[in-house]
Image (cartoon, rainbow, N blue to C red; front, side, top):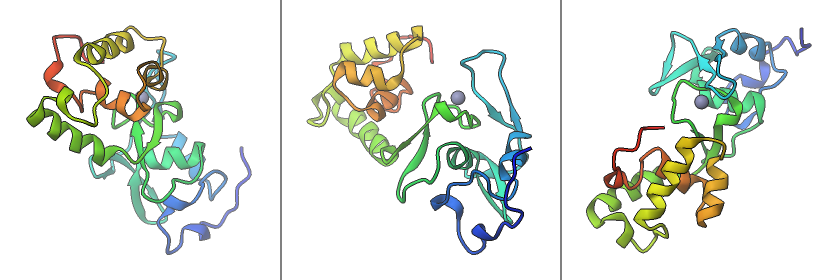
Amino acid sequence: MMTAPSSPAPFEGHPPQGLPLRGVGGVFQRFTKHVILPEDPEGCFILDTSEKAKGYPGFGIAGKCYRGNRVAWMLFHGAIPAGSHVLHRCDNRRCVRPDHLFLGTNKINCEDMTRKGRSRFGERNSNVRLSPDDVIAIRDTYSKGGITQAELGKRYGVSQSTAHCVITRKKWKHLDVGIKNV
Ligand SMILES: [Zn+2]
């Protein structure tokens, strides 16, 4: 049993996104009770709660419901900087596995670029540095495993968030050529 302050006072009147949650008021123990661990050592940790928060499994803290992935980030990594999103490498909204999560401000950009990609065929977009061959190769390599999105991004000279958008088909969806979804 971890020792933790008994008072939930740090949450009173504050949304917790700015606070590291570890050690606060038994949140950690309560959260982990709802997490289903996978048999696959690389698999997703599924948050199994009946609450929902904006399409994500929710978790209640001090009377408010928060997205499970945000709570997991704060428990394992610390505070979420203002304006940042907690994103999934695995594209599984129910996943709260700390190493499947990453911080980004790219969510909106990612969606923006999807729209541009649809209307302007991705590769002609001036922001885009990947060729169609790169996109297909990134997805193919990632689906074979053993490499992270960050490493793939580095290999192709793009950010991890761009690699994420490519792999999860938030960008260049029109380049899908029947490669199995990852
Ligand atoms: Zn996951």
